[in-house]
Amino acid sequence: MPVQKVSIVIPVYCEKATIREIVHRVGGVSLPLEKEIIIVDDFSTDGTRDILTEIQNTNPMVKILFHEHNRGKGAALRTGFAQATGQVIIVQDADLEYDPQEYPKLLQPILDEKADVVYGSRFLGGPQRVLYFWHYVGNKFLTLLSNMLSNLNLNDMETCYKVFRASILQQVQFKSDRFGFEPEFTMKIAKLHCRVYQVAISYSGRTYKEGKKINWRDGMACFWHILRFRFLD
Image (cartoon, rainbow, N blue to C red):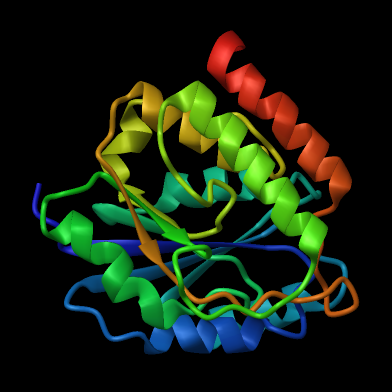
């Protein structure tokens, strides 16, 4: 099926400081495709929901869904995926670490009929803010383990930017509720033998003081999820 529409799915949890700007940036991206924006609020408690209600009432391009209790990023993505009507889906975090202006190059391998899935890699030479060394080490270790068990040669499995054909959702059922979505997605598209590309992206990481949420416990959980979705699922 030719690609006519792209669905941008944005999971949100307590992003009062950035939600208006990310909606503005995503909405402002120029693409040669129809575009829909689906935001899933995972029961934010900092005032984000009030802002989203305002956006919902004033911006017809944006569809907003609200969880009635906190369920995690993976659960929010499943809710958004179920509402997507585009032939291609882009996962976009609600913070400002990733730049929506890079959508065109993320989409290009799919539009060229070369890829089913595209990863936006933070480690292929794009500009990035210098931050936590041990996060970098942890990412590299988890990506290496994932590559060993999936037989893919990714260099940034944990990246937010995963762009994929919506038809993949008809072939797999995602189960992870939190950040386990990243290794689960990777293992499942590897089992499907999808054509995978990765492209360089910029990365403007933030500190914990600025609102970063992922922590060492999520890294340990990711280790388990790699093994789980390779051998047990």
